[in-house]
Amino acid sequence: MNTSDAIELLKKKGYKTTGKRKDILSFFEDADGYRTAKDLIQHLESTYDGISFDTIYRNLHLYHEVGILEVTELNGEKHFRMNCASHHHHHFICKDCGKTKEIEVCPMEEVRKSLANYEIEDHKFEIYGLCPQCQDV
Amino acid sequence: MNTSDAIELLKKKGYKTTGKRKDILSFFEDADGYRTAKDLIQHLESTYDGISFDTIYRNLHLYHEVGILEVTELNGEKHFRMNCASHHHHHFICKDCGKTKEIEVCPMEEVRKSLANYEIEDHKFEIYGLCPQCQDV
DNA sequence: TATAAAATCGTAATCATTCCTATTTACAAA
DNA sequence: TTTGTAAATAGGAATGATTACGATTTTATA
Image (cartoon, rainbow over the protein chains, first blue to last red):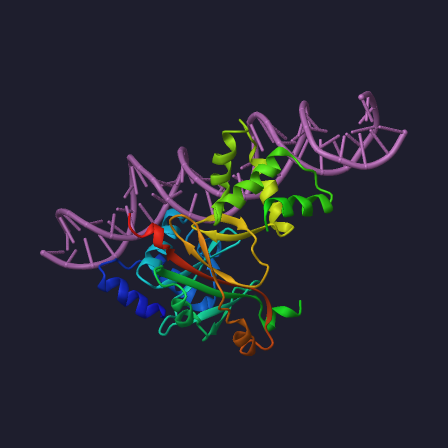
């Protein structure tokens, strides 16, 4: 998913296009990893003085709802990244810079067998650590 | 891990035994799944009127630190359960009642190969849904 | 260009969690 | 058994992320 695909998707669903919405999208397109609401506010404040929490969180939720963003919860804070689910995969997440690396392994097929009678709604497989760039500080 | 093992471990580490500490342990021993700080407060309030947040959170942190409790973050809230890591495994977690089922599959061996140069510190593999008991409501 | 619906602002409220000081308690040593 | 002291707790304020909401502004379109 990239910014223009996302704008297209939003239009198709009847949502309006605003400067802030576009900037939020490019922020995540450039980020190439997980970012928090705080990160986003900091980025937008230079352009839009006095931007409201409401705007930030409303759009983060909206984007997640329509599948533009993925969410994960780390250290009591929600982290968002551009959805890259063209195919199913998981992520290594760098604790330092938030950048991600795709992991193709998914053990769910095998797991399903051991969960007969259980209704599986979702699953999460994440690996945490330091990416090569963040190791020598 | 059960209550008496935990008390033993705490003593060995030089921590004092109090009624509250014991009750917190039995709460989790009986729980057989993930519980929140709020759940714990509700449980303790009937016995200890006016119990302090400090006591709750200090002990949750302590128990996590020494390995009595495991933690996971769901819906903006930390969830705790008795540590059952006699061997490495993961969990199915019921969204309704918090009960867990052990999952023996762990794909980390395979994953490590694709993460050369990455420093792996931790990983999380959880399956969410409804357990058989919670499906027909 | 007028209009209605959607988006945003400004700010207060909420919720989980952390922090702080005074007081109480557990337990080891006398 | 008493006592000294470090650890534990109470009570409540503070913090940080997130949500809520009435008033205002902006977008899309007729």
